[in-house]
Length: 170
Ligand SMILES: Cc1cc2nc3c(=O)[nH]c(=O)nc-3n(C[C@H](O)[C@H](O)[C@H](O)COP(=O)(O)OP(=O)(O)OC[C@H]3O[C@@H](n4cnc5c(N)ncnc54)[C@H](O)[C@@H]3O)c2cc1C
Image (tube, rainbow, N blue to C red; front, top):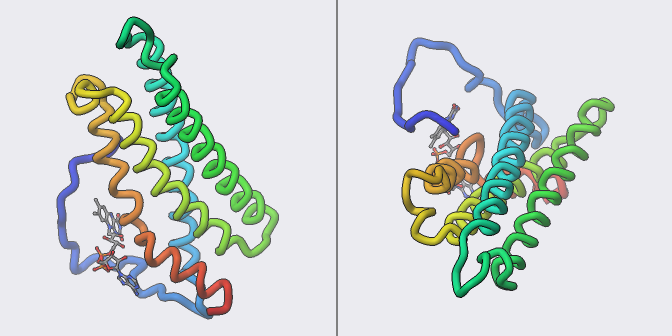
């Protein structure tokens, strides 16, 4: 899903860093990035759900496919709900943005909701895969590692809440 993380410094390269918050709102480039990572996280969650659904129909334990155990079914139902909620919030923010309305609050909420959801979804899917989820063969462990960046990268969850708080007039 992404490259191996590392760190490089490009001190001579001009960047958007001088573009600061104005009127309590994050700069446009920041909110545009929120859209991108919200959409990417929603898509990653859909892939995780699809591959985990396949796995639970195939993998058997205690004489039946693990997907027929209620506890697994409920986990997958919760995942489907988180995905739908995050995706719908992202689409709602996008529609407002395309219509020319102020979408800062909505896209910030979408970023916040989808990044934590992606990490939780990846972690739950890994758990459902049992020991296999920890192995490199199934890609789930990689997805879980990648998803951990979401609540940090592009602005942390805490900063998203700060933006929403300011939008609420606090
Ligand atoms: C793999 C990776 C890729 C990245 N790619 C990019 C990139 O392409 N472009 C880019 O510009 N940046 C990139 N980043 C940087 C990323 O955006 C920052 O790591 C992130 O914004 C957090 O900043 P920080 O690491 O300096 O944490 P800090 O600002 O030091 O924050 C540390 C902790 O304190 C909390 N905190 C800080 N201030 C407050 C506050 N006011 N109230 C409450 N809590 C607070 C934070 O939420 C966090 O939990 C990347 C980071 C990683 C790990």
